[in-house]
Image (cartoon, rainbow, N blue to C red):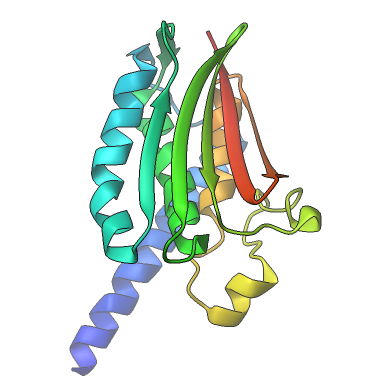
Length: 183
């Protein structure tokens, strides 16, 4: 039993060290990107397929909305998928049972916008801080269900490396995490 606990802690620390390494490389603009042609609808379908069982287990409805005639992007598909995974993980963590998460992708002029909308709550004053390393909302700290506080910081850096932008906001009764990548 003691070895199992030590092993789990070792795995957790290894992930934390890897996240810190990735964040540092991205912040210093030394993280290499393997750019290629990326079809936004395919990325969304893969993400929804991967997260559907987790959403089902949590009693959360997960849906996708893909705009028509989306252009292909020149991006690192693995890194953009990592951003989507981080945003969906965050949404699952903060959406109550019976809630809904929508992954929406649309064409916005010179950019393709990816949005993860959920029925979880985000205080207006927290929206500007969620992308800071190690920052966690008070509610996440109280229930101690959150991660290390690096996923959204890494996501921001990955989007910036692609020449895009990322933000969080309240939209009525929903929380929206969105990012845009240039076409």
